[in-house]
Amino acid sequence: MMSRVFKFPTLFYQADNLSNSSQKNYLLNILLTFILSLVSAVLGFLGLTSSNFAFVSAALIFFSILATIYLVLSKKDQTWYRSRALAESVKSISFKYATGAEPLSLQLEGKVVDDNIIDKLNALLKEHQQLSEDFCHIGSDINYITSEMKNIRNQNFEERKDFYLKNRIQDQLDFYNTNAENNRRKSKFWFSIMILFQILAMIFAILRAKYPEINIWPADVFLLASSFVFTWLVTKKHRELSASYRLTAFEISKIKEKFLNILDDKEFEIFVADSENAFSREHTQWLARQDSL
Image (cartoon, rainbow, N blue to C red; front, top):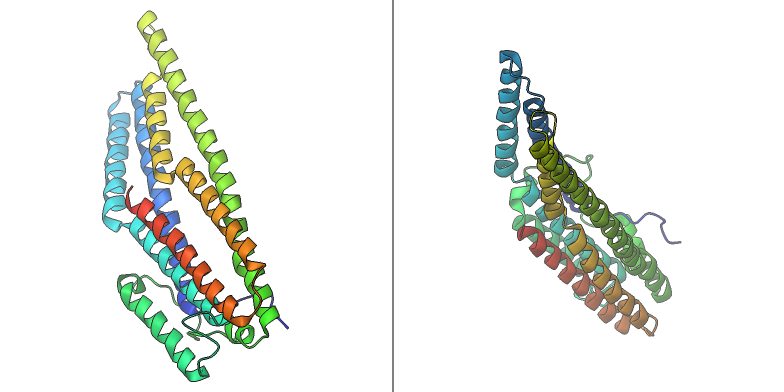
């Protein structure tokens, strides 16, 4: 009987948790920097010139600078990308083991293949040794090979084939299709917000020029807000990700079509190995795109 929940080695969850927490930390710091700068700009716009408000404005700018310095020095973005790459590598090796794909073939003796995957996971950990210092402790059991991985490996050809289709190919296809659409919508939303802020900034700038005696036109505030939205778009790369995810989903659809023609274990081993290599290429390209920011 196939397990409903497929559990990965402990290293996957450590890398996955670190990636998620680092991403959250990185994006929250960007948001904090913007809020501090915006509040300082609003205080200046309101013309609050008393010593108390001047001190508050200076303090906000100071903390904004500190947040920016922390953002650069902490390298949370790099930790986010690298730990995500590690998590996906562990996931790929786990599926190769569970399905008996090369180089973890079912033809190998049990101890040999177990030693093989342990060596591969240790090599990954050594390659990303700088991340291990930030790994959180997960329970008392450190698993290289979970019971679920072994259970799937011991199932017959049709069961392993069905498992891989549902839990890997279809899962990846759903992920890329969903995220392609989500990023498309987010790109349109934030681009619209940026244009709106720029239009408002232009309108208030015109009004300020036409009615200079009235000092209530927040053109600079909306211009700053527009700049932040532009920075957010560049950071998140919604449009580029949407296009990339669409292309990857198309490639996975072609992989799914080839899956239907698999007739025996040998073809299945080769198919899984080729599929995992294709997924790894996408993860490598994703990492390269993030590093180019």
